[in-house]
Image 1 (cartoon, rainbow, N blue to C red):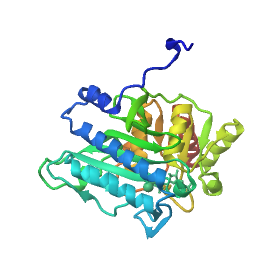
Image 2: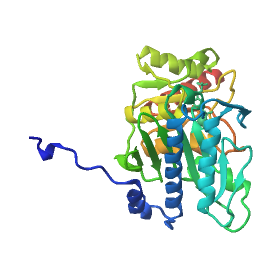
Image 3: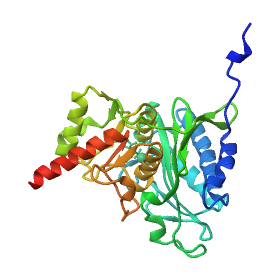
Length: 338
Ligand code: AHG
Ligand code: MN
Ligand code: MN
């Protein structure tokens, strides 16, 4: 006979309940941010369904067009963009959206308080080969008065002004991980119930890690401090793990301890990743989980964006590993100066 005490009967707190229970932690607490999180979670379910069926309903492959960042748009990039922007537009809580797939700021409801920056689908090149992909989002409060047209100032805010950020990971299971500035929590989607449940409460990244994630094919064009850091990882026998899907690489490193880096290369002198809808969101999450995010010389969340599609080099993950990258930069800048 099976003993009842040995069967895990709890299925965790449903996302909706969690959002409701924690709404008061947020200083504005009017329920608008909660609704935005629910809209993102719901769009994530729809995109998850479409990703799972992509190979069956001709959703794999290229659109034959380029987005603002100069990347090939995949059919699922375009579809995910429609799903998220439509849900966030209809909800009424959002005044402007910045998306990787849209050239300009999308002006939505001038009577709303929140600005969203979103990478609707990250890791596009992995869509057709069944590797994990993700959605990344940042939420800001506008700075101009509600009811007036949205300004550039509302949108071009540094990461330190984020009020919420997170990602959906479409992996071996689908997860929503987010922060509103009081720690990081992860929810796993149960497709049989159509609900996300709290599975990773108060996530904390190990202070030091045993994984580094860098595209070493570009090693020859890395700067001397970045080369020195990679060499140091090799010398220390730290494992190299690189999926090429930022969300998936980030999520693994968050759980296990490690660092993800996309430095400047000859091909991409400012790195490849976009500040407003990739780097800032994950920087907020990692800092809330006890880690760090840096260009090597500056804290990611303190960069003042000048353009919505701006790129930045990034090193993100376990505190001590990011500090080692920063130390190499400092040391070598000093040597160059002397
Ligand atoms: P996106 O699909 O949104 O354009 O982003 C892809 C990014 C990121 O997910 C990944 O870590 C990185 O590109 C991989 O770039 P490389 O192939 O140059 O290593
Ligand atoms: Mn991306
Ligand atoms: Mn993308």
